[in-house]
Amino acid sequence: MKKYSIYIIGAALFGLLAGYLLFGNSNAEKDTMVTHDHSSESADQMWTCSMHPQIMKPEAGDCPICGMDLIPAENNAVGLEANQFKLTKNAMALANVQTSIVGHGETADGVIKLSGKIVENEENNLVQVSYFSGRIERLNVNFTGETVRKGQLLATIYSPELYAAQQELITTASLKASQPGLYKAVRNKLKLWKLSEQQINQIETTGEIRDNFPVYATVSGTVLEKLVNQGDYIKMGQPLFKIANLNTVWANFDVYENQINLFKKGQEVLVTTNAYANKEFKAKVDFIDPILDNRTRTVKLRAVLKNADDIFKPGMFVQAKIKGIQQNERQVLKVPSSAVLWTGERSVVYIKTNPSKPVFELREVAVGDEIGGNYEVFEGLENGNEIVTNGAFTVDAAAQLQGKKSMMNKEAGKKMTGHEGHHM
Image 1: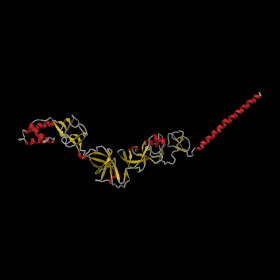
Image 2 (image 1 turned 45 degrees about the vertical axis):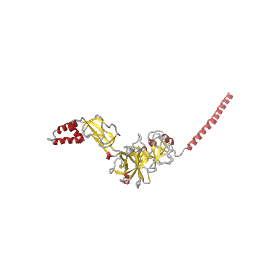
Image 3 (image 1 turned 90 degrees about the horizontal axis):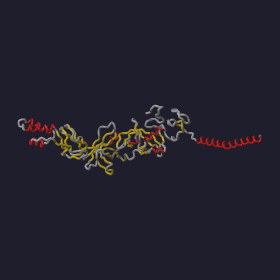
Image 4 (image 1 turned 30 degrees about the vertical axis):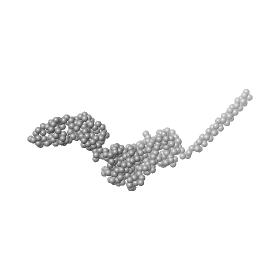
């Protein structure tokens, strides 16, 4: 029995020794690895909350807002200012973030570029009206854009009052010797309704009363608007058509408040349009509106363009170059409308502060009216700034998540949550 006991004790001791050699060394190596990993951690490691990224602490713990465990923060803010933040290349690619340089190609060598629109020349506009009441029996012009010439038949109208006036003329014609005043009054009434002397004499001579009377165009031009339809009942003086002579048109350009003193009547304007990209059309400044538009802070600058070949269509966007400008004021820059974000009270853009790295910063700007897909910026940007023109909302979302200045957060390091007040 003693012999067997010695064998059992020996086996146990051998097992303990083997276990120590196997598992003891492994634990020692594990301790060494853990110690090595901790030693490799940066002394500047910060800890943040996944739900409240504005929380930054130098050591692990609980979030003071929601109580969740803090997690290691990405060390991507090194060397950045308080209002700046960084996006990863992957985030840039997924959001298709695109940027462009502000101000290049807008002005150079005393040349200012303006954006505007073609409108009809109001001096050549006419509203064709009906000179008597009645019902439109036939409409000879049926669509806008149709060209009409002076004297062309536009419509035929049945008028009960004109029918009665013709009867009065026939009756008073037999009494013109005894009652010349009454006879003359009836003839004048027909003249006021734009019946010609020939028409009045024909009614008097034949004694025949016409049921329908024609309406003739009093000017040549293009029908811009058809205001009635066949079968409509109309009143005296009611508009039938809006007709414009488009042999000349106006080009209206917006000039901002700080540019007004740079322009004067008679300056030469070189007008271009996308329809004829390689051609320039000369004109002169014809009028500068004396009244400032309080909404857009602009005045209208107008040039008259010859349009015998029907090149310019009302509504067409055009650009103008005006040379010889001595501009001492700070340049008004243009930015694509996709770059500007609105909060209701503020307009903001995101600028890329480092040309070689995806580092961004919010910038508040003062903008004017949108013209041709661009805003003119009065304050907040400088010539040469690189701004986000595509993906601005995604960049703003990244700013909010990182607790930086954003559309809804005026101050860096603060973020709107259910636990905090609103920072507007």
